Image 1 (tube, rainbow, N blue to C red):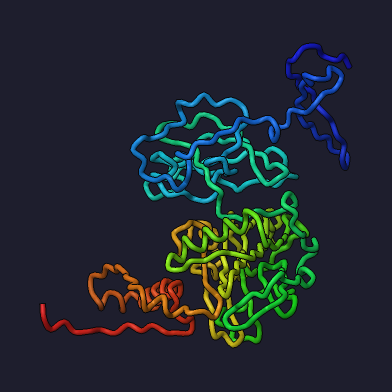
Image 2 (cartoon, rainbow, N blue to C red; image 1 turned 60 degrees about the vertical axis):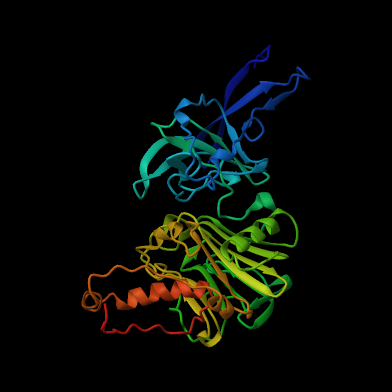
Amino acid sequence: MKVPSGPEVFLFHVFALQEEVAYKTPVHWRRSTTDPIRWITADPCYNYTVLDDPRRSTDNRYSYELMCDVWVSWSGWYRLFIHGQSAQMPDTCVDKYSCGTNVPLWLNGGHPNVADGVVTRGVCGHWFNNCCRTPSSSIRVKACPGGYYVYEFVVPVTCHLAYCAGRGIFYPFGWAVGDAINPVVDDESSSVIQLSSPFLFFGRTYQQIYVNNNGHLTFNKASAEYVPYSFPGYESQDIIAGLWTNLDNSVRGFVSYQQYTSGDVLSQATQDINTHFPNLTFTASRVFVATWNKDAYSNSTITETSFQVVLISGSNSSFILMNYGEIAETGLPVQAGYDTINSTHYFVVPGSDSGSFISNLRNSSNVDVPGQWAFRVDSGPRNSLLKNNVVSFRVRLSSFSDLTQSGNTERLLQKMKQELVKYGLPNNCELKLRKLQKIKP
């Protein structure tokens, strides 16, 4: 092979044979400027343009100066930052009028793993209450060692569309950040994991935990159960179910976990909890992150489902976050939420008990962050939150009889209870609706 001369970039093709199938992978090379004999790869993970524009932040809403990426001369690969902090495109729906524009663009299809190499993903714009009302041109994405991503941005279809930047709701996970990986076996679990400090869960203190491949966490023993029971189950175990169903990581995806006692993850957890629970002054000292990434359902090996459960502790307070990415529909029994011994406390994430609707989990929330659910789960002063706050509901009904005749009473009460649980209402309380006769105008 003739060695090129000069600084140009050349394109070769490498052929690999595996199981009698030929794969052709383009490999870019450029000549080293310091050593004419040495050639280095032009991997986009190390050859990108920094795009640090705080206007692209998902927190930048209703901007007076609208951005439009039609007017940007996009060229090559980009890595996103916000105020010098590494960021990524959100891969769940973003509120319209965010990111300094009218129609914010988010990544449809989720981020790849390092092993996936360069992938192509769709880009969606949120408009007219439709998360993908304005589909834009597809882009290429690559996951890089070190837990960041690079994007090959292209000109969107029209104005005012702009690419968003945010850290995303998922906490760092996978091989690149040093996660432990569960056995690649159907219905398996991690070995016992000793927690760096106790985790308080509704009056009980746990020093250990198990990450089960079928989408849930248990404390006293591992669980291979793949058919969830409905919460409240009045069982003899505490359980946290990110999405309890028959998953099979031996076919596709992986399950991983890691615990943190220092670093950026604790800062991220502190910010999340103080944002979601503004009446607290909280500092995270311990974080445990369990991730089910692109796992398949056992009856459909082509499906991919991704979610996280994050346990956050500090002082005598404990919280859990449930983060949802791409969730495939399924005909299998499913359940998300948490349950306790004898169901003294429990919660069912709305829509998580129906396989036909669970794809909506990535857009649902109890804290106004699409795809994220947050709960305080220690035995602290939960009810005091209700005493110091007035929680209001706005319900428009044409008449009381319309509500009862349509059979929506229980649905309304359940939604009210779910909101009140966030502010400290015990899970085992029942709400009832009664008619009051109006005797004065």
